Length: 125
Image (tube, rainbow, N blue to C red):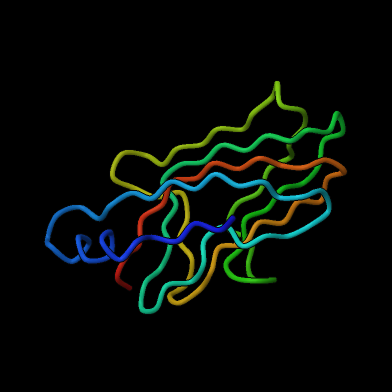
């Protein structure tokens, strides 16, 4: 379930005000990868905050990458749902940015599913 902004959101982002914030909630299957946010032409994805939890008792590496098999932008070891990892950007800042025209991919190396919630904006490069 990749998140894609609506045409209304894109139209508002060029109106001079702050860009709209898009939320995505998705599940990344055990030992799998998933597109979290699809690439948007002439835009880059900038993450503002996220939370991720796993359903396995065994800690596993969870990564967010700049494109399929791209550079690791953020990673954490995640375990069961009683230990969520929650991260927010400093005021006025971002956690990380994807390259222009590039999707945001999640990699889950664990033996249980991972649950990701992320908020992002689309920026002009």
